[in-house]
Image (tube, rainbow, N blue to C red; front, side, top):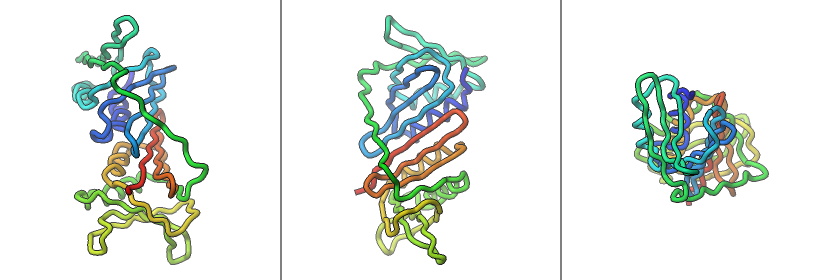
Length: 240
């Protein structure tokens, strides 16, 4: 059994408001692992309590799956249909509904490349739930602008700080700056990112227990989140 709210939370962490619609679900030893994304934007989501048989499942239309799951509630019993060694359907059943989702051939979904973290990061900041809420609000106030700049500087006491700046790069545009403190080893970093993707990641992980933002100037932005049973990792390349 898997709780419906837990499952939809896991799905939202890779779906990212429609960015990643076609994925493979890999289940081994009751652990669900999903890789998603494309060049310059990759994620990995793992859920440690997914009690079905070891399998690889092709999800061709996550949006449709979300709509089917929306009518269910409570704990869901999950089962699979297969023809020979090919999985064809997945069932989600609660006390009232038995929802059937047709699976895709995993061969048509391709492969997702992963990457290795750099040996060190220039910025490492622990994100609180309050930080996430404020950053989402800041982006919402400039929802028509998808530019974001992450910089390092010093405050009045000479302490290194990280600033997340939402807004256009022109000197006459509206801007919002949010300060973060953590382990910062380099000053005068200025790296642009896509704020729409950043906001979608934060929104999908508001239920996190721990969050970590790390940046390497030559690597990009890494975000890590954990809950009691779920871990999610994201990489975003800098804007050119």
